Length: 91
Image (tube, rainbow, N blue to C red; front, side):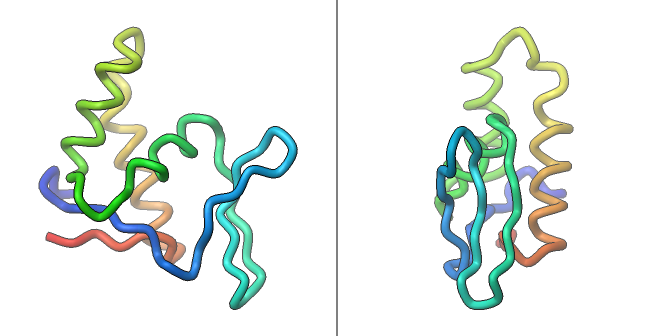
């Protein structure tokens, strides 16, 4: 994954909080994707303006105790979301 790629949430999906869980819901096809707290934060940061590298740096600043794993975690989640059609990555 290119660090300069810009992730953008598919407009058919909405990020919602249901009981203590975050989900991505697509009303067009009734699909649901569950997120943990970190995934929720990453998706919130996918605003179509920030690059993958910017997301990683923001999270490293917020969570310095796990900084060594953050790049891998962000790329893994974004790859999964891209494969599911939930995000697109613009070069």
